Image 1 (cartoon, one colour):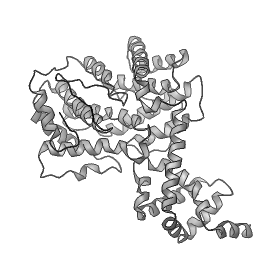
Image 2 (cartoon, one colour):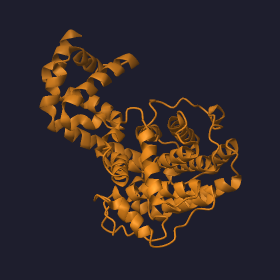
Image 3 (cartoon, one colour):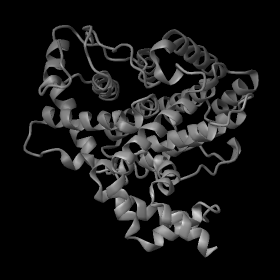
Image 4 (cartoon, rainbow, N blue to C red):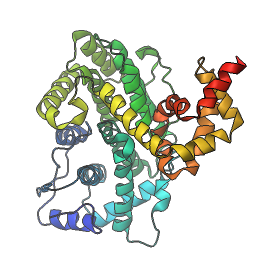
Length: 400
């Protein structure tokens, strides 16, 4: 029995798998279809593509994706190198992650260089997946971040082929995913007021890109020619399809959009049909276990639940927060202005920067500094005037 939270679990994983001959995938298509069946592509793992079955009874939420990430990294290693040496794989995986330098994401610096390769890989995977289970994403949003873990798989394959991660590869593929999700939601027959928030949640899940909005207005302006691997193309189509399925079905116009995406990357219509059927089948079968799809409007539910959690956290730290805010005269003025009119972009940036500086000094509020934390700042900004002394609003009224 593997315990993914205990030191040494990777060695135990390979010890269990070494008792029987391991399968090496015959083609990228075979690999992708099998991995998609496990749920890894969708961010909800229901099985592992291993010869020896792995029992998950009693595992906590973040343990299954940890083993799934290791398992899928190993699978793409076998596919690409046509080798099945566990030690060689572990060393390659550690070297790969050490080459990663995500923008504003320094978790790999925590890996101790004097540990064994397998223990170092455990630390990397633990940090890699643990980020998805923080206070921001405890409701359902981790499905989006975990779905984006397949980017690691694609990048690892590039590393194995080229001996390095191609320049800006990670940034390019994440931006392609976000752009496709955005365009997918624009084609939805039934529009939702929360589609924009869904985009923001996807943006909050990216690790290598820093952008606040998606500027691609149509598929013709989205250049996907950079992606030549079938694995990359399949993944992009599936991510677009998953976004379209968020309302429970894919209409004819939405299916047409997916076919246009496939055409732009030279993928057959047969794959699109299969992708739609696979997505529908997987989500329909596992919907009751996927928190993301358990609510009539999951984005609204997430926003409502998160708002309450953040307000509770802010209230508990009210005195410290108010003290820090009052000491910043410029911030006080801008917050007062925000109660009377919409701030312009320059003013919003000043408020965001100063609030984040304040959050750094209040340990309990460091959630706003985590990946996706900026998504919660509007909640904080809206709630702050209610915490400030009554003289704050009274003085503003007198000055008008």
